[in-house]
Image (cartoon, rainbow, N blue to C red):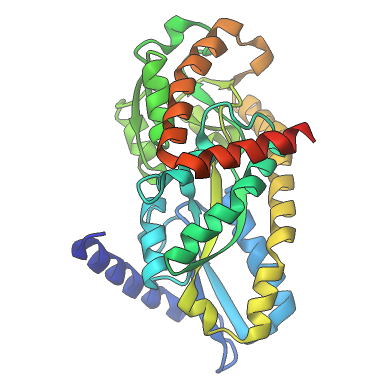
Length: 338
């Protein structure tokens, strides 16, 4: 990371400190943290973050007060948050890890196309990879706590994606390099765009389709710009909650233990709200005039095209991650078979 980026992070942290003056009063000896999130409190990442904060407070009281800073309030996009937490500019964050393939290609695992096709498989993939994720965070002065899966990705567009013609030349927003490469190989014209920059791009007509989940479409009211959502069950990219190691080590031992002890409960809660959100989001889309095309109504030829395009992306990921990647996929296959 460049010095300029570090300086920007320090400035963002100072801005966050100014915001902190408006917080509720705590005991004088309360330790105060901020939690960064590019997404907002109504998004699944925000719900996961606030569940964690609430459950932790039940156990530790006013020893630690974590303020959720959603909607990019601290000035960070997901791509910035790894460095910001590593450097201690912010104590903790919930971060979309598919933005961080440049840090380590292992972070692209959860968005590999058509690897995990159900919420249960997404959980198994997380469990298979967690030890390696923990090593990456530990090597970068951080502690990994829990994950929040995105609902399955599909395509919002001005027509259902039920033919090759619908894909050809489609100016579509993607959220990471995996999606960009897959859709380019499938004939589309993808552009990777950060979540917070998406609406301006739609408003100006720079793009005419979006790769995201149904919940993502609800959060941004995409029915104001597009007419259709096509369910593809493409991938379930992970958010992860990570903590600065120095800040963690400075906590009282009982607070550290409580924080680590919540990991499994948070995972369980997060997978449940993700699963529950799928059909609920479809209903909201329909209620707002959108047409939802289910995967069962998408021709096999479209999935064949996308799978073929994704195969090269998956092979490239294995080549980049070496034995780490192949061992994770082998463990994942064993979990699915069991």
